[in-house]
Length: 561
Image (cartoon, rainbow, N blue to C red; front, side):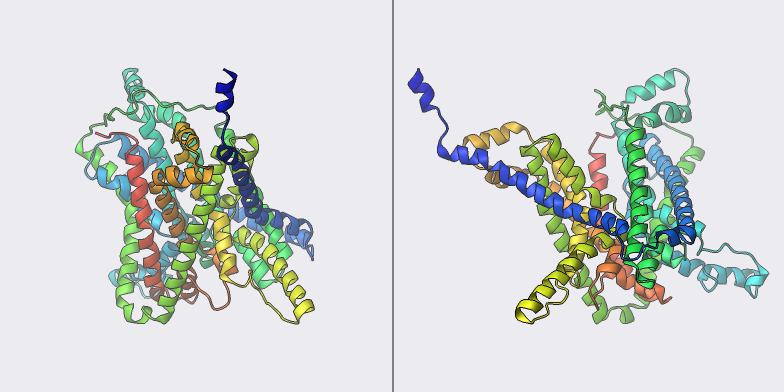
């Protein structure tokens, strides 16, 4: 018996395989430290600036930045909640013409960056635009003194523009939450005499509140991140103040202090979101795969449902897309030039590099979590996701500080030893942009891969390890083939997000290096809106593909009748 037990001792290779997970833990620690570096850089620079202008900011511009930012976030939050909840409830529970079309069409405004829609509506609604020109022709008005027309370049205009493209965050998560709820809840509520509206407010919405809170927090963080819209509309938010303090006043420490204030906003938002669902546990109902019995209504109410879903699509996507297409066609010969081609290639390169980098690091982090499911690993995953909550302008401050510090140190070292100046190797190259994109969007790939890995039974790992495969071999031969669809989707989402990113790109791009986003921004800043149509249209078209994928993934959560 003793000999039998002794003969079952593990061979040397399985022992090596058992030790190898420590390499994954070390890799996760290194990735987390690098990704969290920008956050700590911002905090350090804000606490120990070369020139402390914090008292001056408090006495002058900071209160105005805070008030305007709060007003913008509050207004956008209200708009996105109303549109997102109304459309999600309508397409989920009401039967009306075009419902299946609007299930995915309501996500289309996701593809339009807020600054693009701001440029489009400014060209349409300004005094020289076609809308006011048509009104003057119809009514015989000769100048702006003869009539009143709302000014688009205001805080209210910026609020509406941002709200039109960000409501899909609330719609996406609210609809997914509605689809997961049990049909028996509706039946019980209706049997107790509640109307459809009463059922929504007293039964459906309280259960879906955690998902709605997550969507709203994402909306508010994206609003805080926006620069192109607020800059074009001259709305003085914290992001605009950060750019002004850094670029115009040349005070990086003051910019870091404003960035710290923005981080405080993010922390408050995340805390409120978690607090709102601290005592709520969500469990899947046993009958949530049954088809939903939608409300049948008279034609008049069906038309109302149609209008509720059609208006956000028309004003958030269709009208801007048609306008861009018309401008792109009219000015195609002028827009299709060497600058456009070069900037398109720059965008493709940066987006592809960022997608690949975030995918590799995301897989490493998620698989490390699978091998070491400890509290420390959970903390590291949260730290690695901090970048997604950081506004792009804040992230740019955090990236430029350590990279510029390294460049200056290495340049001094090379001068002393070899008499050669290396210049700005990291902070003055595309590396800074790829690094910033990776920090910002790593949470997208890591979260997607982690969620997919949780659905793979541990017995597959055990079987692979029992055959002598190391964790790395198990990942390559077992998990990656299973995760192929998830990996492609995560990479595509990151690719499109990088294509649209503006604040960090404006700050970190090398000299004479533009992307499609900065190219559009430059034309719009010079009031050449029509010439920005072609690059803007390319950005919009690139964003449609992941929208279709997201819509299909939500629809597949239930067999909808």
